[in-house]
Structure formats: C-alpha cells, structure tokens
Amino acid sequence: MLKQSMSCRARFNMSRTKLDAESIARALSELNASAASPWALVDGKLHKGFQFKDFVEAFGFMSRVALVAERMDHHPEWSNVYNRVVVDLSTHDAGGITTLDFTLASRIEGLSS
Image (cartoon, rainbow, N blue to C red):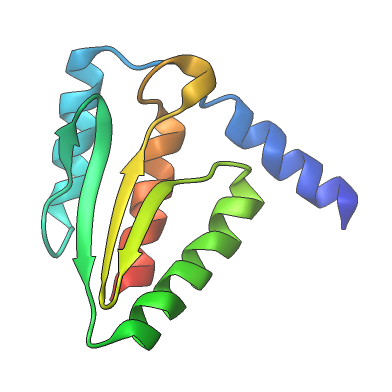
C-alpha cells in the first residue's frame, strides 16, 4: 500500500512545473469543454463555485474531494457556506498553475455531478 501511494505521489510531483499563459488557456478550454459550468482564472488561480441542494450535499462533495486531494498530495483552497462551495486551485511551490491543478479540477468535476 505504501509503495503504491509513493508511486502515485511521484507521478503527481512531475506535474508541479508552472504553466505559461498559452498552456493555461489551452488546458482551461479543454477542462471547460466537459464542465457543467466553466472554471475561470481569478487572481492567478483556477476558480469555480458549486451549488448543491443543501449543506449535507455540499459537505459530502467536500469530503469526496478531500479524499482525492489527499491521495494526490494537492489540496484546494476552498470555502463553504450552506449549499455553496468555492474552490481555488494553484500550486504554491511552483508559484502558479500547474498540470496538477488541472488534474485535480478535472477530478473535482467528476465528483460534482
């Protein structure tokens, strides 16, 4: 189990290089092609708000995301107010947005439906 976890982390660590503006625009377009509502660039971060039926659904979503984020060793900045969850993604050690942020955003999209 530990060996598998370490190889997973090693794979995600290779994605921690800051992307240039063109790469971000291309990846954002690809991400939004299948998103229910679009992600945006806000203050140098990937940003999206989600709305759920109630607090329990919002909290359940956050719990599912937390498990994925922990496995990736990549944690979102987020907030929750009742049925709304706001997510911001960037890779602090890279000083901006990386492929890892887009990978997590894509996984979050899959968990939101």
